[in-house]
Figure 1 (spheres, rainbow, N blue to C red):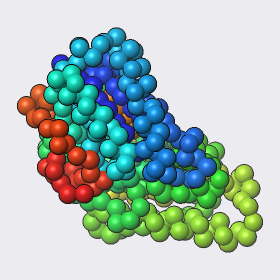
Figure 2: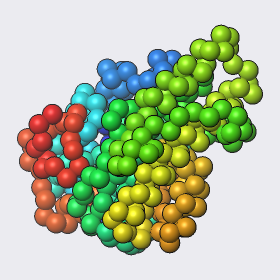
Figure 3: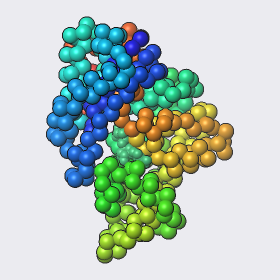
Length: 341
Ligand code: KG4
Ligand code: ZN
């Protein structure tokens, strides 16, 4: 079964061709980062317009790279939430028209399920049940995953997502958007013990997160300097901030693994591309015999292959979306496709 995936939920325009839900034939990602950089964050209206301009060329490239024609496809999977509503609608409208013209089965895919399924493009089996830490620019949640499509949320952030905190701190330091990768690079050259930032919610005894206080602590630290930070101070802030964020993410994930008794933990979403987070997670979980797995960095950040991987499984189960398929800015994982939004 060859499935075309389409992803336009935020600032990446992506199309991918995936065989049997596991083999990537192509995965083309056109990032809009340069477009939004000067605003220090995604401007929704600009994102929608850029998706309109980019989607068809990206799709053509994906088919070309995969060496398939539209007539070789067996289905179309498109992200229909959560995300920026205007951006989502570009992908959903296109996918509906494309599937209708070609007479192909269509399914809407929850973006979060896409992130949690990306690992299946690289690893045949993921042990279930497992705990998944979904940590991206828009979400920070822990789930117990009992199998594909079966998710129980164990905890989530009360305020900012971890990736959002990385991006906001990067903005304060003038590192551009998105800033996660830049912070990781600079943190590697800074002393993580030089500045001790707070670890919000770390000892809360539950599985929830909070990152806005950490972000504010960084802002206060920079304001207290009363001048621009030196290069060395920037590296120290990056290292101190990243260490605090990782501490909380690892501590809560380890707690979730303990409470559920799972042997495997999946880290997914854009922030899972962070090497320091992966290493610390693997180290701490190994102490209790739990294994940490994660997709390779290119499959952690937004891409359409993960949407095709999840969509393939839904199509194989006989799921079909009608031409009334809609897009939803809020779409909880595990909710029926028609959640209100
Ligand atoms: O999953 P994703 O591409 O989009 C959302 O669904 O949100 O995640 C993007 C987020 C951004 O906040 C970005 O700064 C962060 O992932 N990110 C990183 C790294 N690479 C991307 N954060 C920390 N370290 C990284 N290496
Ligand atoms: Zn994402």
